[in-house]
Image (cartoon, rainbow, N blue to C red; front, side):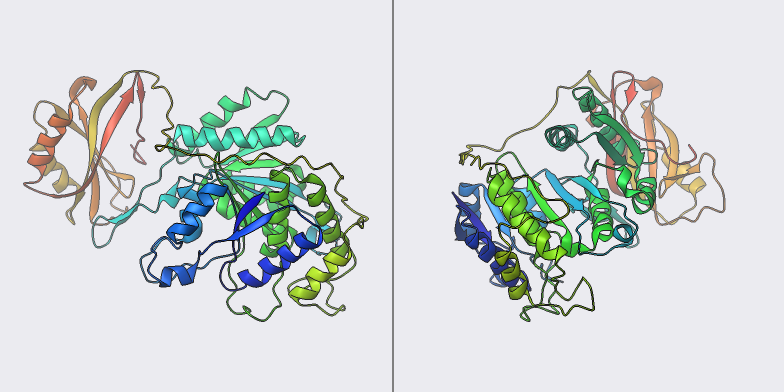
Length: 483
């Protein structure tokens, strides 16, 4: 079996070499094809951080094992890490956090074991990076949460939890505030939960989740979240088990999967051979299990656990009374412990079941969509306008243009209603949202909205618009605060 390997930037080449040396010592039956990705590729003029040859190789092989990579600052380019995940639709980011004996934390010292898995949606949310300046004072980021995208990651989380013998799966969300976007994610979670009655499925608001994770982490098993919230919560969980040096990551897609450490490139210690390779090694072990190399994975992980238990450590963790070792010595210690069994948490030795490598040749982009539940109606529009005038003045101008088709319902500023009622104590910026709904709730056309737009242009600069959609009797838009 052959996989693509990208060594990465900063400490990437050092820790990748350490991991591959351990794989070689264990006779892992994998061949490596090295690909060009990272900061130096950006510097050569490739705006996505990878050469065309690298992209083709990864798409042919279907597995990428990568070191941490840096995105150049101030050059207007996107993160190569995010670009890779999104380009190849690795929709589920799986991060496992476990107590490791030899890595002291507040919880390990208290005898509280941690074994939890965060599954983070990996494609959507604000990570689309779709942003605009609406006025010189107002920036807008679009947040996409889709039903098919949510279904992909949530279905994966339930299936993974079921196969691993988990008892509980929790949805972290902020649906109490973001009722449409997080509300959709939560709705899909409970739709999928019906297919897995043997799993306890519940949900918790993400801020409450964070509080509970740092006070009672042992109560959680599998947690699935949207992209940004999952990013933050997974780093929080890394702190529970010793830091990002012990945080592996698997990016799972239907056709391509990426395995990488969560941490960054650590340029301050690059080239010194002192970096901790544990996170990348754990990511590689997850890759071996994904490929069906169960015995290799267990042997290597047991050797790692044995090494940690014995007190061998790099400078970023461990018993300070025991001298730290460099990256190479740490890797060699693991190699010398291959075949040994740790006292705590030994992994069961299962036979290898190598997966058949499938190369997908797609002729066109897959379109993922669900069936529309009911007929769609357009019942109005939100007009985002630039103005530094007071709400009453804005309303008076808008009312001049509503005609017979629309009525002006509300005007909000930063999501808070300021007309027809509001408070003089509400601070405002120079961008308003004026909501026009159809008279009597009747359907309107895009032509009607364009005519309204044309009329309002006489008095305002219109920064953006959003249609007010309705399916059946369900409004598909949120209310303003105070409306």
